[in-house]
Amino acid sequence: MSRKQQLLKRHRRNKRLALLAGLVVLVLLGVLVKGWLAPLLAVLAWVAHEAWFADHLFYDPSDDYQYNFGAQALQPGVTLTDGRLRVNDALALAGSETLILAMRVKAGWLGRFVDPVVEISAAGQVDRQAFERGANGLRYLNLSSFGAALSAGDLQLRGRHCRLVGEPRLWLWRHPELRNRRVMVIAPHADDAELAAFGLYGQADSWIVTLTAGEIEAEHYQAMGMPKAEAARLKGRLRAWDSIAVPAWAGVAQERCVQLGYFCLQLPAMQAAPDQAIGSREADLADTRLFRQYNRVQLPGDADGVPSWNNLLADLRAVLELARPEVLVMPHPAIDPHPDHICSQAAVKEALHGSSWQPELILGYANHLHDNDRWPMGDAHAGVSLPPFFDGSQVMVPCSLELTPATQVDKAMALGMMHDLQPAPPFKRRLRRWLQQCLAGRRWPPYGENEFMRKAVRRHELFWIDSPSRSKE
Image (tube, rainbow, N blue to C red; front, side, top):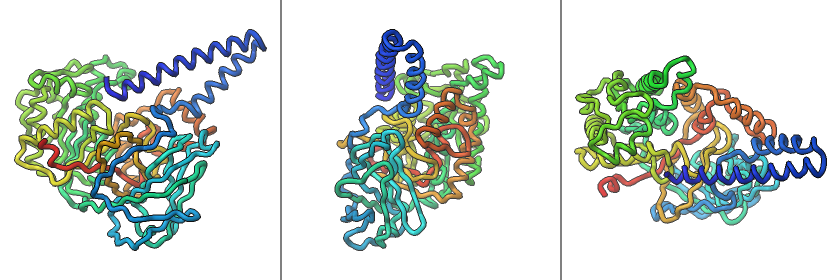
């Protein structure tokens, strides 16, 4: 069982215990006070839960985030006086640096019911980076969009429903230029490349490699009257098409998009038995070639269509040697807990062992978190602060890429083309969203109802730098 599954299991157990205790209290009130009081309080308690306590937050908001940035970052001295952040010495910035500011964020009483926000402003630019309700600990703001204002001493920080306390600490990284490089994005499923790196791959000489068809959980298509296996095969074909066609919106040619066609949530089983064929859970299928039909690239696995780990490694080596990427972008296993994401990263690292080509730079991304299902918190188009992380023994080097407003809108349109992000959420989730909008001040973008429209359409795309040498360890 993954760590996230363990956290979710504990969360559900605690919720059941709380509901049981609440039910006992309501029964006692109904018996001892007024009979009508119990159902009224039950409704009010449910509304309060949906509005303020329904987030999947698997840590205490008063915990400090624990980051170890290593020894390579610059640490310019800074001071925060009357809301103005100033550097102690002049900074020479090119504009592409990653700037991260550590501050203690202390939510006020209202910040326990409305998301606390740090407002960053300078010369007409405003960014609002949100944190957990009730936050009271060390947090990391992303100032990468405000380097010039920081150098000029014009950067303002203001807490809304929270206060910034303690001494600020600034880290600065000068990363290699990412634009106009040969980039390969590894996507475990169709839409992962767009969620994590649409802005990056649209500015580079890019390849997109999608490992699985993402065919399972096809209830939307079963509702059209299809049997389960047929619905799964249709969903897989649609998502395979998405993985090839949607990157063209950012200028990536179909010849540079590759769908490997392995099966969703079966990568761990493949890794455990590398020689064995591991078929789809739901599509009644044990041949990857159905989902490879849109490829323009020939791969070793096309010969027999066997869904095995060894075939996956051979396919990855072939596409790495064909594309020869300078920058390789893939899920980061320390942050993103999805089992297919973890195995995708492991497969690429293993494939690099036998590849004649090695990238110059590896970037990790996270489309899911262990501890917080709402990250990035706050509104669409806001900046991306660092996610909750509590392992100070691991060196984590952030790399932030700024997206223009036009690119953010294009990214939203690309996500809207993805079939898996189109179905409407369940009624309960829509009702919860309405209650949170009315009572907790939360807002959702107009691009679509899927939560990723809020989480992924942002001012920044955030990556983590890995050393290519680690792939040889």
